[in-house]
Image 1: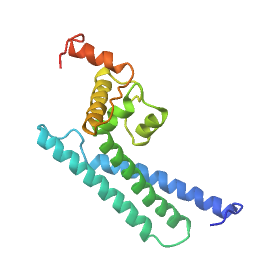
Image 2: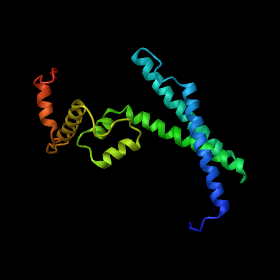
Image 3: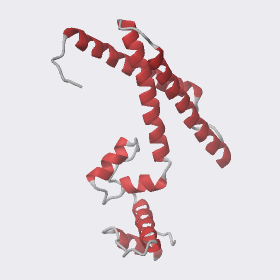
Length: 182
């Protein structure tokens, strides 16, 4: 690999590629919205099945986008835009799928939403597409995280390390301070 001074042709090609990436991403999001209803299902089993089909639909769109990008041959403007569209479809659907999966993972959500989350943990949550106001969570999620960390450490014979400020909330919850006894 060698870095060179950009030429007018290379700048034009990158511009066309970016147009294709954005268009492909938008089209794939619209397509996913047309083929999948995230609120479908009334029972837990139906909702779980719908969620799994959502992952499969995203995977299909991502694979289709990858196939499009790999299938287009040529250096003209249309070929460059189509390659970009395929890359955009694959990229957006992969990122959205990872975000959906991460949002459904209670441990990841609790970790990144904890009031004591580091900048790196918050950035990880945002990078994974967790649609949370990272750093602004309820006391319950912080307590759940603290309990999960404590169980993990206890099961491995580690000395317990509790999250600051969460111990008192946990004790208040257990005593019924918030109207809920665990």
